[in-house]
Amino acid sequence: MDTFSDRMAHAGVTLLRSGKVRDIYTWQDEIWLVASDRISAYDVIMPTPIPDKGKILTSLSRHWFELTADQCPNHVLGYNLPSGCDLVEFEGRLTRARRCEIFQVECVARGYLAGSGWEEYRQSGTVGGHAVPKGLRESDKLPEPLFTPARKNDHGHDENLTPQEARAALGEARYEELRDLTLRLYAWAADYAAQRGILLADTKLEFGRDATTGKVLLADEIFTPDSSRFWPADAYQPGGPQPSFDKQYLRDYLKTLTSWNKTAPGPELPPEVVENTKKKYLEALERLGR
Image (tube, rainbow, N blue to C red):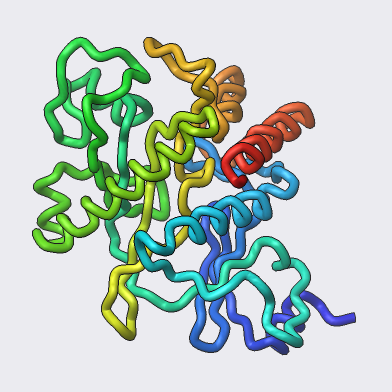
């Protein structure tokens, strides 16, 4: 019986690299992104997968790519395996994409004061280097959405950049282009989510330059629980952390483990944590993907 490696070789598919939760392959002149069921927290991959997580995220990202195609072109070529490619493991998890040069700055839009934005605000009174009003509470809505880019880091935390640092990394014209695209897409998605009873607190987008045309393309994944904070609007109470449809449930569980110091290897997850985490992802898909 042919092994997975044999079938990959026969199809002409080559593993390029494995990330925390996705594997990147090449096939002919395409890039294939395959979403796994791995889940990470505190930059550590948990040893226990979340069943069907990769399929859920691929479905939701596909939904958003299709909805935003008229606002910004994207890297997607399709989601189905080519004829004769016997890699059933990829079904429902595969995004076939055109090659593009990914900008090494992640584009983050923040509409609410949470995560590293809240930590920075507590320390310096700024968010992503932007001055914001005094006296805000955790999870408060910001006066206006902010563009707070970060430098990509495949190992460990991404490095938050000030506007000046991001301009130096990207160049003035590219910085303004990506800032405007990010904030426009965030505003549209936040409105879409609000109509479905969900607050889009913040999101991370990635863009690349098409190797052939030079055009900017929306890439990677978009508006998924792995790249965004989604809060149920009917439970929103600023002044502390919010219930969410993302990995926060898992993080909250891990905080209760006095025996784990947030370094690899991660702890095995009990069945109820796996099941409840999956439910969070499914609810995001069901409420947003319609």
